[in-house]
Image 1 (cartoon, rainbow, N blue to C red):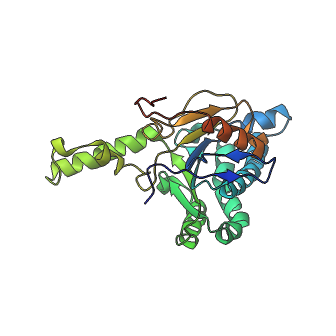
Image 2: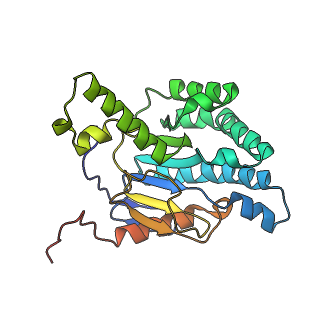
Image 3: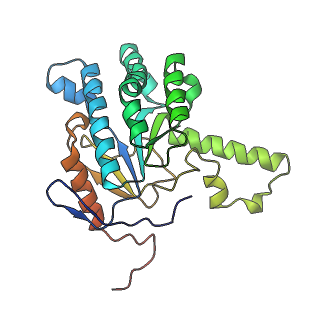
Length: 254
């Protein structure tokens, strides 16, 4: 579906920036909403509300720059441990976001995808997500992939169970298990691995996000809270990416 290595040259309309390599797939851990709100004496949900506006800005800019896939870590399997009122609000956000933004996504030819355990999501959230997926299913522009109720350890565990079941019923033998077989049982099997991971808010960890897929991804961390993250920060991350040499464990001849 995708080339192994996507490269394109793109001149930004903002500041005349030139990106020699626009990452094909960017993944973002959108962190710091609660701290952004606390710093301003606001309830945590105010940070999540502002963070939703940031999502719209970054999706538009990523699409304009020619990014093929944008994966956003929206809600983790661990986030259920948060206070109930915050979780309830977070579960309403996809519905609010898609209600206001879906027409633009359709117009821009963006395809909405979701990876995660959708079965635990409230019915209204599931309905909003399914509607977005159905209405954009035939779009062939940028893929906007939400990691929603997603946890990488659960994903890998479920993949192992699926492979074990095939071994049990005789449709697969252990010697046939390869990295490709494992990848084909992951939730992201239809997507190439991220080229660039961005995490906001100053935290330097993966937080159970795409542990298999990020094996050779370039990381970029910033102290900026997600609600304050803007197009210039995205440009900075891509510029840093463009200055790196990806060797994938090999050696690049000088």
